[in-house]
Length: 379
Image (cartoon, rainbow, N blue to C red; front, side, top):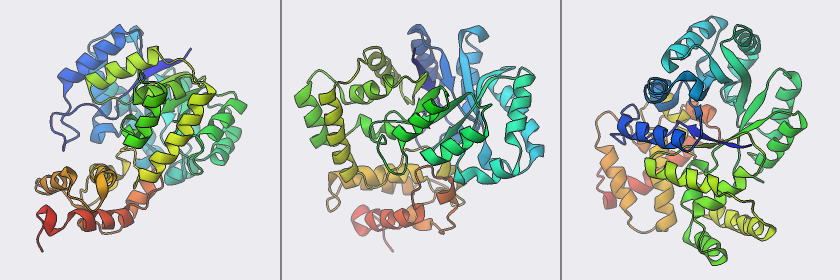
């Protein structure tokens, strides 16, 4: 039976420009609502919320609930691994951060071309196997944004892996870069249970273009846009579907939609194909706001935030004034932040991006769009 997982990548904030200022009061309410609904799977990572994501899990879950009432999944941060001597200290730090003495699920984080320095040059698999033998990990696996061929190579070479976490949603189902469907088929071929991340693709599928929403509503006026996305993933025979809710309201909505996620029929699947075409024609930057690029940026540019403003601006009409340009100006006035034109094109961010976005090139257009006199910028 599929479990609804509580993804802790995008927790509510007290300050929208500081990802370390977590609104713990609201997070606690979210955890309580989630547990009260009968779910128990929490997913976090060493790098989430600029390094305090695991600590947030400890404060809101471990310090408030008995250990046998929940399951915790976290990830070894391959982004920072360069040598074997780092593994033990980081793992010990993660146990301390989370406030537990074992992890139910432990993953190699984003095994892909972007992290190959770690998984090619450091014996990560022996390390996680050892930790499993010691009782510090119950189940070992990996998360990846790689394509189907890459995933098959990994699973063939490492049969000891017990599960995989994949990016799956109806928009990425047939995407030639992400290959959600093909990756799911590879996992099934090797008998690996699948956990699903990004069911709403960073929020894109919760706020689709009006043209797409109209098609959905004409077919079923009682179903929300979110419902279509949840129903698609909830019926794929996965063991966990992660919701990355960033507010109590969103979480409650996700729980309701998950509990009422009856399978899509052929007509509805056909509508989602049409909706996908509309969304793809409207999306300028295929960013899911994972923020891996933000952590890597030497110029302190909140790339994910700027891309979100840019996408929303483009959807409203790129030649018109929008409130998103004003929001960009307000952001630019914050202390110690970089703006799009501050990009030095070091391309480190490209290496970190699971969606394979040429970030420096897009930032040039973001600067060209927003850093104008029309939005209050002067030379």
